[in-house]
Image (cartoon, rainbow, N blue to C red; front, side, top):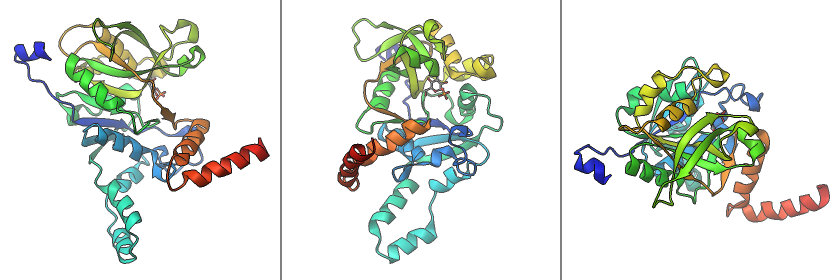
Length: 307
Ligand code: G1P
C-alpha cells in the first residue's frame, strides 16, 4: 500500500460483490426443477440470503448476481412485496414483517444473465462491465461461512495491501482435494495473516495435488482477472475455469498480478450436496435461540432411539 501511494497509484477499495448463481442445481432435483437451488432454505432463509448478508457485513453493499433462466425467484426475493408487507403490518406481525423487510434492503442488488453457462470463469467475466476497474469479491453460494467469522473482511484487507488477488484456502483431507481447486503455497516473510499462492490446479487427482489446501468459495480479485479470463482457454470440463486464470495471475508480478491466500480454519457449511446441506440446517437451527433448545433435546432422543 505504501509503495502504491508513493507511486501515486490510486488505491481502489473493494465495494462490489459478485455472486455466480446460474447453476442448474442438478444435485437437488427434483426440488430444483422450478426453484433455483440458491432459494432452498437453510432453516428459514434461502441459502443465497446468508451469502448477501456476509457480503454486507464485509462492507460490500453492491451485489451483482450472475443468473440464468429460471432464476426470477432470486429477484423476487430481494424485492419488496407490498401486499404481504401491509397485511403483516395490519395483523401486527412485527417480527415477520421485519424479517421480510430485512431481505428487501440488504444491499443494492443487480443482475446480469450468463445466457450460456460456460463455467465459473465465464460467470465472473460476465461481471466485467458492472465491476469496472476496481477489485471485487466473488462469493460462491454453495459455501456458507460462519457468520461470526470475518474471513471476507480479512481477504479484503490482504487485497488492499498486496494489490493482487486473494483466495480463501482450507486444509482438507487428501482424498477430498479432487473436488476443489488446489493451491501450492509458500510463506510470506514477516506475514502470518496470509500466504503466497505459487500455483493452482482445478480439481487435481489426489496424487497430483500440489497440497491439501483447497480453494473455497470466497475470492477477492484484482480487475486484472478480466483480461486474464478473456485469454483463458476452456479447461477442465471444457469450461472456462477461474482457477486457470488465477494460475496465470499467480505467475506474474506486475500491477494487479500475484495471488495470495488466507487460510480459513473456521466453520464452513457446504450446501452444495444433500448430506452437507442437511447437516448445515441441523447445526444452524440447533444454534438458534428460538429453535435450538427443542431441537437439541429432540436430537438426543432421536439418536438414542433411532441410531
Ligand atoms: C468451484 C471452483 C473450485 C473451488 C470450488 C469451491 O468448483 O471451480 O476451484 O474449489 O468452487 O467450492 P465447483 O464447486 O463449482 O465445482
